[in-house]
View 1: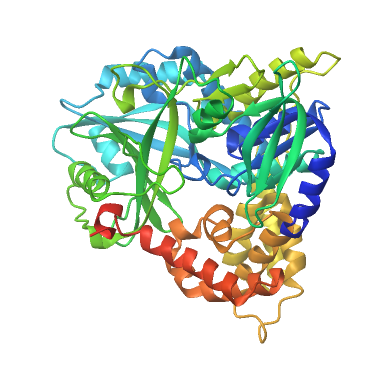
View 2: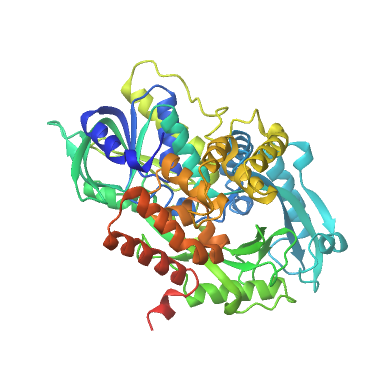
Length: 549
């Protein structure tokens, strides 16, 4: 079990155990390291000061993609490596990763020419060892418009058509840490690393932690400590006295969401903007989301927000590539902003800085991993755990995760996903769900959906103010996904704040009531969490600089 009610038991156990590996940071990188380490037989723990995936790993473009644009920067090795990883991530978690055909329109005078695009996509396919059925094809202008009629026709020469993989980044992260827990790791959210502990030789051997909901402090000891804190990496290096040499530069990316009624995009499109940057427009669950921006950032790491400049930039980009789509700020239903912790390179614009990862070790022994992309999380973890295994000595096996399904992903291989889904939808309907409700649950939870169907038997329409599908999602989130706050549920467990914001407005009171009953919150605690939801709803739509006026 991975219940929110077990958090105090887990922290108690952590304080009594000496681990082989302690990972600081519950984003995709840290969770991937925890899974790799524990499956090799290392006694492993992970702490996260917010919720799992609350930083960068719930705020990406939600694509497991190979980084086509990095070919332009001649980062061939990185493109080859993460390109191959796309298929592995899909195979191990087909419920959270979906192949998505992407259209790259080519216009006269644009960033990409017809010949260079054809060659680039061919190289991309072969570097990534893309299977034949998913290799790129080049389209005429007429064929491009057939795929997506909204694209700007003026100067259109044709298009490239290739496969990327769409994902739910937060759910991918949570399924990875759930798998790590299933394999024996200890992991807990809302626990902050306050300071480091050292032995008599100055070697790092522990962390003083603070449990964020109670303020209680405790210590965790480990032979190896990994700093995988994303945007907070350099802050931990400062605590260790090792913030020298290379450093991070944070860049911010913003995405906006509009209803398909206002932007009826048929097809995912990757397009260039007048200033040469690249932007995605992707249809999802009746919405279209567009992003990302790319600007240097020095503000609040916990709550990065869309500004009116971010919003206007994306609206201009949409008008440029889709001239018949007349969007204004009133059409924006939601937005999110995320930070990319990139390794600083003097004199480079945000979009030019490399996304490759690097591993550093301080004189005290603190291992830090920084940079990298969502797609490459498993290989990044392998690199770090290989280093740990070498330093620990002993006989640890090589990486075990290449063919290891993550939690919810053990459907017998991605080729069986469709058959599995059809079978489970029928089972869900037998539990009282509609076909649409059952399909959504199967797609989101994979093989874990049986637990949600079991919770459906406890549903009483007369006593519970939530629809049955929302009820079982909320109970499952509490019992099996260490959900502590309503925002954990509405953002990281369901993505509803981004893609179904109206449902959040309608159901927030019922969800808070259910969670209050589950946790026995006081009136003051309930009010605090209600306020958090209301602030998040406001911030999803209102730019930060306008909110301050």
